[in-house]
Amino acid sequence: MRILECELEFHDFVYFATREIGRLYETEALIHNYALCYALGLVVSPYFVRQQIPQYREDLSDLNQRGIYVTPAVSIRHSFSLHTWKYAINRYHVDMEKLKRDLWGRNVPGFGRAKELAPESLFRFFIFDRTDRYKPPPWIRIGKWLAKARLDWHECRIKSERSGSYLAVHPLNPLDVLPMSRLRLCDYINMPPVSLINNAHLEGSYLIVECPRGSFCFPAGMQFNFTGDRQS
Image (cartoon, rainbow, N blue to C red; front, side, top):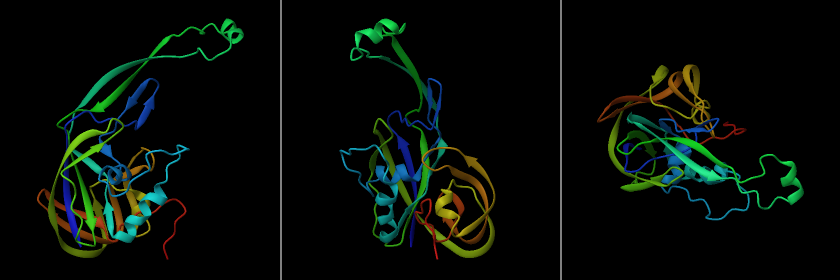
């Protein structure tokens, strides 16, 4: 099995709404592994859909058959930029009687603020490839604005496979981890569509992986799982 350590450098502002606090839309310094799979082209969603309902189970389950797993991405370095945007509330379609009763019936400009990841921010994630054939693209687009990002990668070496208690310092998707490992303690990161865990103290089978930037512990046998799925 190949394990690739990937570094993603942004060449544009990257925005996705991790949290909505009133008029502030905040981007977390983490990238979900679901979003990375779409950005890498490992799964492709249709250009037009009649209902805005995510199809993560249908889109990502095929990667388990292909033997590919992608972790969330964490910041190596990053900075934020705060942008203000404006829009007009279009009420022309409302009937005139309702407009007369509505004190705010005029087209009143609104505004919002977006906290975005700035260019030159650098993130790290890992790809587990059981087929030894996958080669990541050198450039991808990611986020709501499809920002351009450069992707560099290096192969890692599996030093050993062990069983017992261990610390996983890289962020993980708990749905993909808990079927194989028991969670003792972690930092909980609330973000859609599935909250992540960081600095997780786990118990079970794990891999010690040596990479150019250091050694990491990962649960053995990670794959995409979804709410309601069970492993035998």
